[in-house]
Length: 485
Image (cartoon, rainbow, N blue to C red):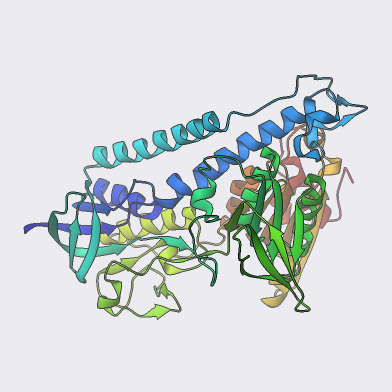
């Protein structure tokens, strides 16, 4: 068996793993990265990037249908959205097109092209940094040794001084609905051979709604089943109301406070039980199970290390150290929040710690975004979370209905909300719901990280006309000085 040694061995080439490897190598740490599949992990290959590409394509197709001259332009019978809204059979913008169609195969090729460029870029960055990349399946022997089996079946033993675990997460399967055949995960949903006529989505969290909305815009009949009493149950109710209204507008059917019991005996539908124990069947060509993700802890020898766990996740401290010396863990493997940008920041920190720098994990805010239509973004504390934390806080919202830029892009639903301490006006949270509000995430996080107060944001000149003006106006409103509402 061939053996090799390295200072840092990274298991997993997703956002956290590859960022850690690049940063460590640039700091002079000999680094080897092992990845069983494509570089970039779930995010680049079967998650964040391909899903946003599909969402964009679906959005563009929906707008084109809205521009079609006449109600027939709206395939599936649902209303066109935003700039495509038409009265009397014509676009409000004056744009008239023939009834559009979509070449799904070409859409997927375009999506796959974006993924290929990004994953290729990751490989180039790793090579340029001097990271050795080994493609194969790693199995841990102990905290300093792993055996890697490549596609040819050859096994190589790797010995290291530092071991970084960045194996990510996997989609959760539900009892009675194992993946396969008509039951799919988000992975299969992002590369459909054909568009199903009837899609049932199990779970109204961000993954289920993002893909459900995209499929609806592409022309599928979409039904969502959710055990909670409202959509996006992890987000506060005020933020999710515009999303619920948009789902109704699109014609997405919702069955809330319902549980799934498995497929029907003929396999052509999904059995659903209501809160009152009544049962009914939903016809379905495909059932997308979007019940969340869990840390990928199985199949690579983690149990042999006997690390301290936090439920199903690997327990870490404020430097991403595990309970074993020089064994580190980052990203989804360590639990919530399972976000690519969290993993990246953790990976960079661990690399710097191994290189001898002083670092500690203490972000003031980690932004979270739901790419539904409208989009939802949050950073820091909501009003309810601030109250639960014992903070005497004030909050104020500014509606996009009073924002000129929102009107010009045909999307004036939603708002920006700020949460600040009442005594010194220190900002502790931002939330927004509306079209393209994901681009406000950086400003939200930056203001919290830098310790900004309401007066700082209110006194900063914001460009006109932009959605960002709503950020300034929310701060002004919290101070009782709102100008445009």
